[in-house]
Image (cartoon, rainbow, N blue to C red):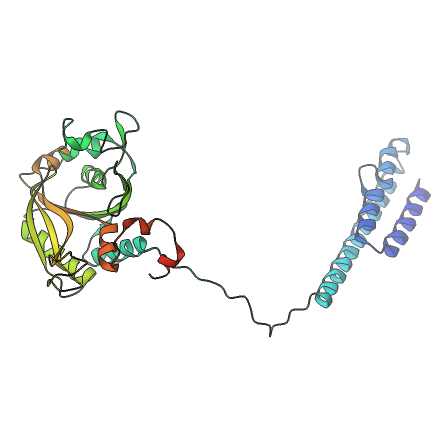
Length: 339
């Protein structure tokens, strides 16, 4: 058996050294070292060898195996090196040739506005809060002082998944969730997508984006709300922007108001953007209703707060002079490249 092993060694070394292709090398590896290889067959016949010779034969087989494995690895490196050299010789790159022009994209106008608003309010000490878009009715309505018979809960206004689960119609549920889990003081804004059963036209969409804000602390007053919104309007729309409040009604705030800003195009004189009025409707706001505070576990006798909310698309349309909301969703590169 010793002579047989030596013969296998000599033959295998010769064949490996003379091998010219990687495929042939793989075949030789299987031939001598595989499960049915010649060395493996020898090992299986060790039972026929006398106990005295077994250690000698076993040591010799392992020695030959190690030598062949080393030789095969060196041959593989040789083939890879040769392959790389051939590629370098045949695949030359002309570094003086002009490259293809890479077209860079940019942030969508809506995303730009969201980032800008976030930066403004982060600078005023606010935190950014987030919540689920598929929301429970208790957070979307009940905790926000919107009873079951309120028109906003009608099927024609809200997308219902089940009787108790809806696609959120505003980002206010995020405020309710934060008030439930966090004790005042609270200063947050809640950006995100919202859903309402509106027909698509130049100013409406069933899917749009809102940013709402909430402040809850001791001794918060309407003057704090107005000062905050004036600061926001000047930072977002220009230093000369003015703001005015008009009385309104929202179930989750009392008193409530609609906030208008002076037209940043004409300065209040009247133009196409503001439709000759000199003012642009911007957002809804008001003092947080005591019932909302109570529903969320906050004592309205000790704390007060204000809230506001606006559509991101409305800000984008006003700021960029866009007349049709549908342009924001059509993904026409010619339109988006302007921003």
